[in-house]
Image 1 (cartoon, rainbow, N blue to C red):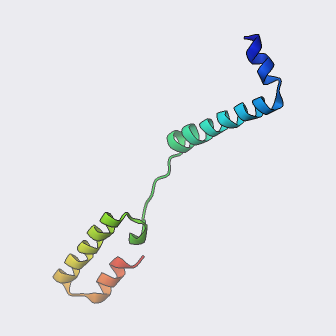
Image 2 (cartoon, helix red, strand yellow; image 1 turned 90 degrees about the vertical axis):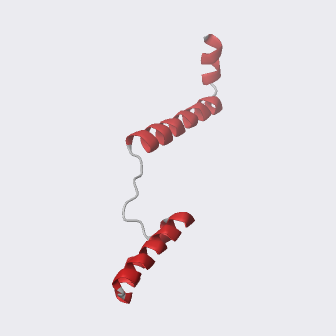
Image 3 (cartoon, rainbow, N blue to C red; image 1 turned 120 degrees about the vertical axis):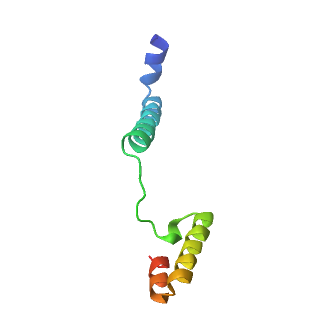
Length: 78
């Protein structure tokens, strides 16, 4: 136990350990558990490629049923 205390007296070791502990607390605890990011109202450009294709197919299906070009354009554009 005394060997560990002696290592922490070195400012470089203490700084590195503090940095790692801060990263773990900040990223894991705060970023992933306490305040996770939740996406809402994303535009089609922000989606994955397969989701963009599905979104475009839905817009095309809507246009084929309603024949309204302005509505189809509004649904595709953010």
